[in-house]
Every structure is written in C-alpha cells, then in structure tokens.
Amino acid sequence: MRLERRRREPKTFCPNCGAPLRDALTHLQCPSCGYAKLTPAGKSDAERKLLAGLNKLLANGHGDTVAVTFRKLARAAPLKNVEIAYARAQWRKILPAEVAVNGSRWFQARKESERIIYKRIRAEVGA
Ligand SMILES: [Zn+2]
Image (cartoon, rainbow, N blue to C red; front, side, top):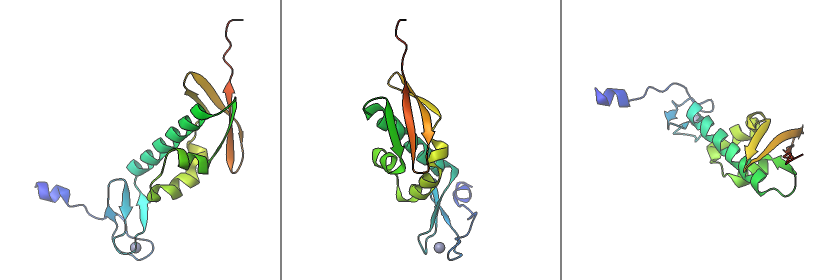
C-alpha cells in the first residue's frame, strides 16, 4: 500500500520530446532531454526568493530610492536554474506594491519594463 502511494503517475509529458515528466516536488523534469517546469510548490519557492531579494536590496539601499531590476534580485537571492525563467517572467507581478523592511515602508513609485523604482515612505517623526 505504501509502495503504491509512492508511485507517482506522470501528470504531463515533455513538450520537447514527449517523455513522461518526473515529479521532483518543486519541479517536473524530463529525464531524457532535461526540460523542467516548476510545480506550484516550486513557484512559491521562487516567489519567496524574489521577496527575500527585494528585502535585501531595500535594506542595503542608499537613500530613499532603490531601482530594482531582475538581475539585482537574482544576485541578492540566488535562483535555481529551473526557477529563473519563471522568476524572470513574473517578478514584476510578484513584487508587492508596498513593503516594510527594517521599520521603513517602501512603495513602488514607478514601474518600468526593466526596473521597478521603490521609494521609502518618510516616517513622520513628531510634528
Ligand atoms: Zn524531454
């Protein structure tokens, strides 16, 4: 019974070569040509990394404006090969409009095709 549960039926086939994809939890992998595709769990991992990268960039940013690019994100939070295509396509949607890092709040001031400009919301201290 336990054996039966462990045996996974391939859900999809490789779009390149038609071989059944192997389920590796975070991604489905083609054993014959190397094609790989993220599963929902793998997508969540990639999203967590992008957010961690954003936090790092904002925490280390100088001044009140930080330009976030995919390259910088990927450098701040290294992505696995299989995660890169998904993250590159989705990072602009995944990054939050507003985020708190080390007690500062940041918001997306401008969204360009290659970068997102985050600005720090100045804390109103006293009055
Ligand atoms: Zn294949």
